[in-house]
Amino acid sequence: MKNYCMYAIIALMLFACKTEKKEKEKKKIQTFGITTIPMPNTLVSGQSFPTDSTTINTWVSESKIVNNLETNTDIITHGWDIWNALTEETDEKNNGQPLRRFETWYTPQDIQKSLRAKTSNTGLRLSSLERFDTGNLEIPHQNQHGLKVKSSDVVGFVKCDPTSAQHIYNNELYFFEVLKSMIEPGKIANIPAFPASSVLIKPVFYPLTKTDSLSPNTYSLPAWPGYHDQVPMDSIIKNGFGSNYWNNDITITTTGETDKEKKVFSINDFIHFKLSKTQAANIINVIDNGQAKEGDYAVLVGMHVNTRENRRWTWQTFWWSENPNSPQSPSSSTIAELKPTTLDRASKHYSMALAYNMISPAQPYYEGSNSITEEEPKKESIYAYNPYLEAGFNADTFDVSASSQNPNNSGGNDSIRKYYSEGYQKVGAIRLSEKLYEGGKLNRVGIETNCMSCHGQARLYDVKSIKDSYQYYITDQYFDLNAPYFKSSVVLDFAWSIQGSLIYRDSISK
Image (tube, rainbow, N blue to C red):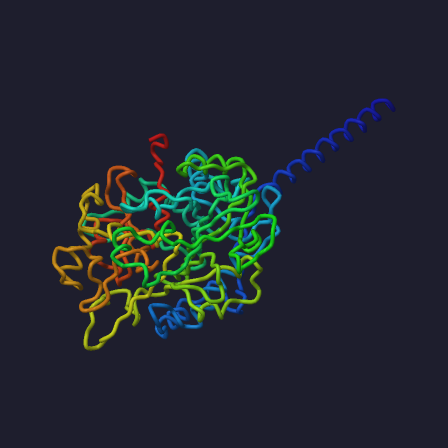
């Protein structure tokens, strides 16, 4: 009997040890994955997040534009508030590196993976997804658009905060069939609106690889010089103003110190991370003549940021600046002066442009106008673009009369041209981009764009397949949320990333 009891005790001890070991292994696996860190409830200025839409729209109504740039201090402060929150370091780590808040968020590929799994397990939660990488870096859709911008050394990914990711997952908005089912002929359909706390961002990086190496541990990077009159507009209309025309390279050192007079900057002046083996292999596949290896640095050069705090979202874009305290357009010293002191060394090195409306004075959601009238004798463009994403756009990118850019011939940009030529613009059968205001400014190229104007065009027509869908970019201009060209399409709540992340539900292998 004693032997039996002793054997039972030993068996229980062994079982307990195995259970404890499994629990430890389980905890280890859980802590190894990346946990998403949501936006804070209170921003660094003390403003709540999300900020009430009435408050934001009051700022918009009081906005004052100087030289096409925002000067309203409330709007500027809010933009920096969001940047501060995005770039704060968290307790999360990946590949031994601390992660900033935005790095912990979901990529569309993460959500796609969960949606595919959900087709066979309807009870699956998005939060069940274990993520062991911050995401693969791809050539941004912007840099594949138009006739002059086919590829770039800039790579990036879309990131969705927990709220927006959950909204996409719950409503299955990445499934092509789901969006198509919403379309009604002759009517304007809209996807379910994102919650107010939603944040969508597009960070873009420049990989420091052997291709760009000047010597061991030093690399060349094109830095935005700003647009200046010495660059003929005729040239930009034809070629755009991408980084190959900037003629302003700086040197990044991964082991040395900053020497601004010699245009040398430490890696610590950049938000950066080291590439994983998977990320490096993917870069080789997507960049022409790309070279990358595990452990190479990727430095953040730009980031589009939009929040659903009001109907047309808020829009701010950031890029690395050689002179962040006196930045070039589309930023300004007025914007830089309101940068919070809580930013760390790297985050302070970025400049910002904002667009909480399309033109000034502010136009309503519906039945506004680009035209100059007796009531509004002066209207001004609001420019907010990212030098590393849109500056390379030439006029051909926005040629809405070119049928070759409307492969499905479903209405697309030809409908926009028809709408404006018959209504607000009365310019006849010419490119919309050739005339913005009657008797006013002509916006034709990437350095004359506005985030809100462009993202407001995000929609899907009743096309046969994902490859037939197309992105219809426009330059800075007002558009009506009920514009006739939205008919027979599903409007995507300003989220181009939905159209760019579509997969098939009924046949994943298509």
